[in-house]
Length: 132
Ligand SMILES: CC(C)(COP(=O)(O)OP(=O)(O)OC[C@H]1O[C@@H](n2cnc3c(N)ncnc32)[C@H](O)[C@@H]1OP(=O)(O)O)[C@@H](O)C(=O)NCCC(=O)NCCS
Image (cartoon, rainbow, N blue to C red; front, side):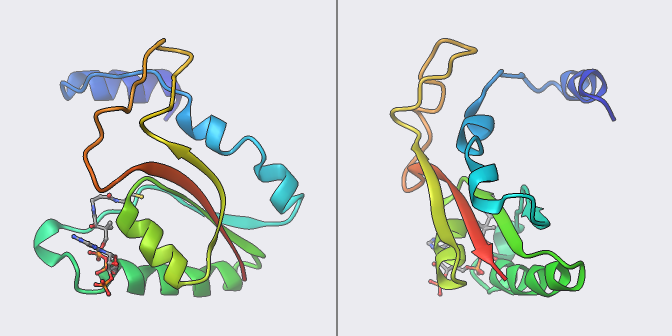
């Protein structure tokens, strides 16, 4: 699905699209860390609230590592928007390669502090990398 198509689909579902450059800013130096090596990126992970805190995401992250190794990847990269996934990644040995605090992030596209209302305890988005 190209960009125009997914934007149309989001609009049909009644979602408001807010332009943002947070993730591209977060990733801008990734090439310096990974070089030309193969890596697996984990994007958007969620667990149904009623199943939360049962170790599901921790277990998934461990399995993802096995899959990445099988595929010949040398790194796993994760953009983590939640304090909870940041804790999980830290326990699994990821290092924080970049961090952007929500309160101070000025979005150049919208011209606003677009994420300043994100509720505690989530304070930043982190670029987390693990060498496997
Ligand atoms: C973040 C999320 C994926 C965690 O999934 P989960 O299966 O509940 O995670 P786990 O059970 O493996 O939790 C592991 C650790 O995360 C932290 N954690 C998870 N949920 C937490 C909560 N509600 N409060 C505090 N810490 C929490 C804890 O450190 C926990 O370890 P502990 O239980 O030994 O203290 C889930 O809460 C979620 O879907 N949240 C909404 C969507 C989201 O923020 N996704 C992440 C985007 S990067």
